[in-house]
Image 1: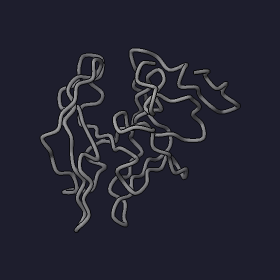
Image 2: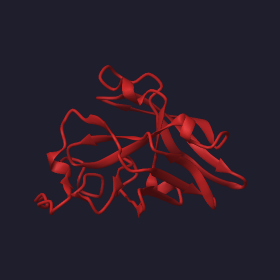
Image 3: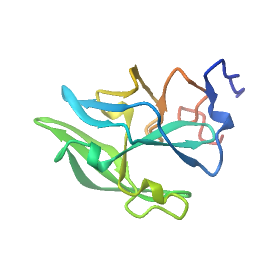
Image 4: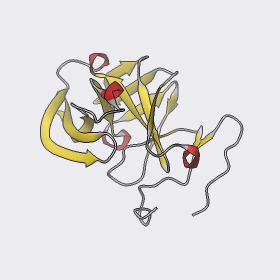
Length: 162
């Protein structure tokens, strides 16, 4: 694995910190599902962690009311704490465990309280500004890949031990 050198206006995920850092997103964020926008925000944050594309979190208030349904799924992050999951339901369309939140984030990540992250691969589309993001490989991390981010990215086959 050899990190890609970032070009002008790009960031390398290998320059991101560990433990992760939370910072504001300057571009508007939009999430589409079942033919419409389920989230629109100018108040999003992103979590940056070594080897991972950024994960974008939007305030719960910027998500269409009633589209998130809590599930029994939970996972644990050594940095952020226990994540609780939501399925996304719009009309007859449903995406199981499409989003997650930290109801009581660990110290240092309190800014994620009331914020929800969406897996780009479990919705129709996610946008940073006007750019549609690519989903991070694998089915765990949920990173948002844009043209301004270079890897290689953890998450795909053979990357677990990075």
